[in-house]
Image 1: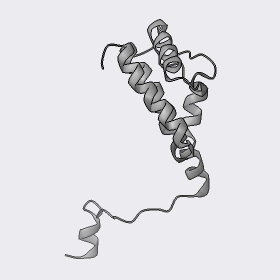
Image 2: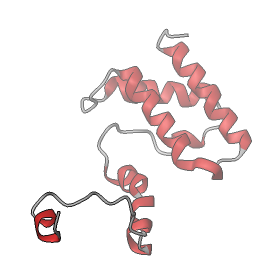
Image 3: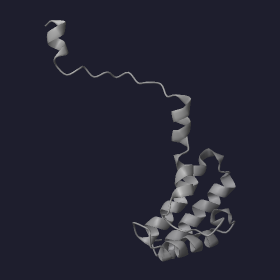
Length: 116
């Protein structure tokens, strides 16, 4: 087949990836901050995740989720999603003691919604 005949067909797929520029990569890493700032998923009490008590965190999340009119899922789904979002957003920067408290809050949240 000649080159002209081959060019009339669909072009061959390439598997080469383009390198990320610094700007787009930096922007991609900060999507969670944008969600935190602009999301209207639920109105949380200020500094709810800074509490040292798993019970307080779970109680506050349950109260916020049950009173919210803007959630898409069930109150349990919304509350657990917010807690997971916070844990995942902190990533490796979250100290072990803080992570343990938040994991206990998950357990308390399940209990608060009768899903233990």
